[in-house]
Image 1: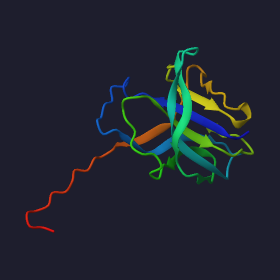
Image 2 (image 1 turned 180 degrees about the vertical axis):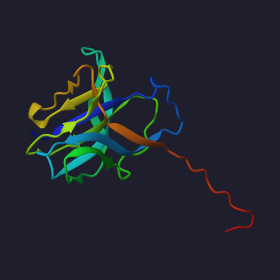
Image 3 (image 1 turned 120 degrees about the horizontal axis):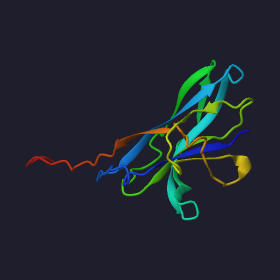
Image 4 (image 1 turned 60 degrees about the vertical axis):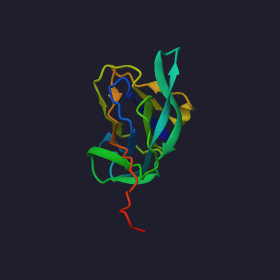
Length: 172
């Protein structure tokens, strides 16, 4: 198994987040559980920001094309246990507006000898978390194990606008 991508909907207008300057994605985290059969292991991961496309047949947003993705990072899990995996976006995504929904994506492009678990929480909202595998083609499936969602969380910071420097009178 491999080529898995997880997508998590963030909807600033619905969540009451409004910031005239927008936001910038710094890191994307995903909790993963590695068993004794999984570790030690080194694997690749990258993250991105994708368009949220309304699908009337599902009455939900689904992940669309990605606006930007991070570099691919090599990550190691040295022993069995719970890991808070993060991918640094390395300034790959420019400032994004808070006037529309997006998907934050987390990609695991390579296979594992055993498949560690991406942790899911018990949030009962539907249409929030999605997953797809390379073997499934471009088909997204809702993560609906009891209404669960992946615990993929972004770290964003408000984008700052710089005001022009004022020159002192007589300065060159």
